[in-house]
Amino acid sequence: MLHQLLLLRHAKAAPGSASLSDHARPLNLRGRQAAETVRRAMRERGLQPDLVLVSSARRTLQTLERLEPWAETPLIEPMDALYLANPAQLLRVLHSVTETVRSVLLVAHNPGLHELALRLAENTRSAEAMRLAAGFPTATLAEFSLAGPWRTLGSGGLSEGVQLRHLLLPDESPDLAA
Image (cartoon, rainbow, N blue to C red; front, side, top):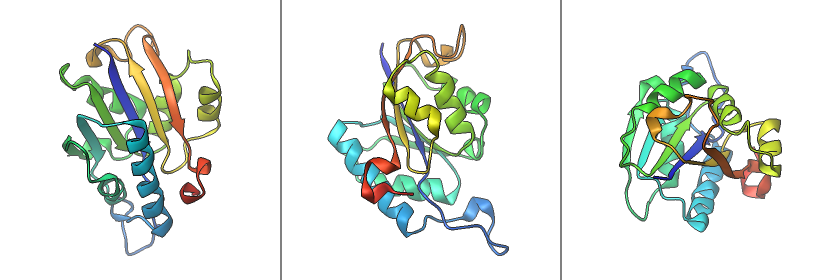
């Protein structure tokens, strides 16, 4: 079964402050607008996840809220384990996805999300991969196809059977400028 993995970095958040924990930082106006632009881009491309795995941080949850409404409501799982997770932690979460799930949207944070995307795209030689190598700013969406089961993602070479299909960067749209 061919699977789809969508990696989305949360949209732009308000700066940190002494009175607000990093986990509680909300989206700023630019971030809210960027997330809505991502929603439109996902609809235009027919990207409809079956399952959304989202960090429990306020900015990731607010990014996800801006992607609604869905044509078909996915199962949404907020997870503390995704907050500032490294690539190995992100992979462990993805390995737990059941095989009947065709498409997963993972909404999380850098640097772990960008590092995972780079590792997944390491065998992709395209303009998309070159742009991915340059960075993964807020509100960036990467679409991958996976030829194997979720539980084997990362075994036998992380990018084996994985293809970077599309990369939507904030600078592609004036609304997304971060």
